[in-house]
Image 1 (tube, one colour):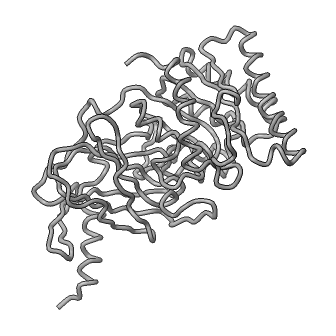
Image 2: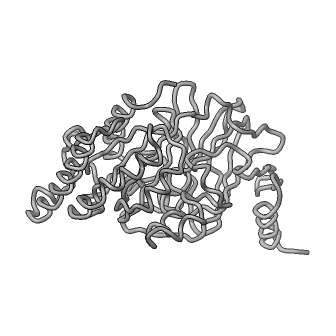
Image 3: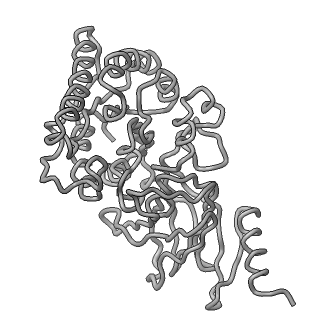
Length: 367
């Protein structure tokens, strides 16, 4: 007779490699039906991405990008799965291209999944699916009341989720989200590691994810750790995406000289591709070493100055639908909002998100 371990491995292969749905039974005897997340409602991934995995830029476009950007583009930051179910418990199964580790981030943020539920007024955090390896399975929530409700799962920030399956108790309903839970307004945010989500404690706490829930937006997170440097190739990629607003939060990575050379050509090319789409330029957030390290202070100050000069030049050239969010309009700091002096903690992200959101509300088209 085959061992239980062998049967579990066979079952895993059937679920992951099989069709739209598969049935499995856990150790308690409860049977679960698994559905490929691709058959539910996907947010945060542009229609220009045709890969089978949950990537942010399509494989056909990646060879033209800087090597670091091309690699990070496979990370699933900002992508989420929405669905409705009346199941009394929810399981998640997901496969990563690689289990990654970062010294200033939790495994949950890098490789895990976050579950949110609609409580009738807003999206409320419920639980996190714990990762441990490339192939993972986790009972995320149990003992629900059996009412038909909407849920959202945020995917990993710094790993590539190649496959995701949602499991519900067999016989219960599992289907795509209602249209009212699927935002129609789209925002592309291009930036650095802070945009990508470093160093949130879990995927749902990156500020683009916070904005997606609070403002009911479909947000495409195009943050690239250490690599948001405004190369023209990225303007080409952004310009092909459907967007109601572009947010450029990319000051932290390029040098002042690179900002001087690249910002204006980058924005001009984006404007050529999207003549009428508003663009919001965001200065760099405060970094904790700046008041102490004199060289760093000069560097960081010059970054924002050069970005501001680019904005003023474009305004003088009669660019329309161009907006600016200076660092002074980002949150006041008590020096407790980062993990490592640069990357935001959950506290930092919850402070930044409302300020970016306030600027977006003035720019976004009405619902």
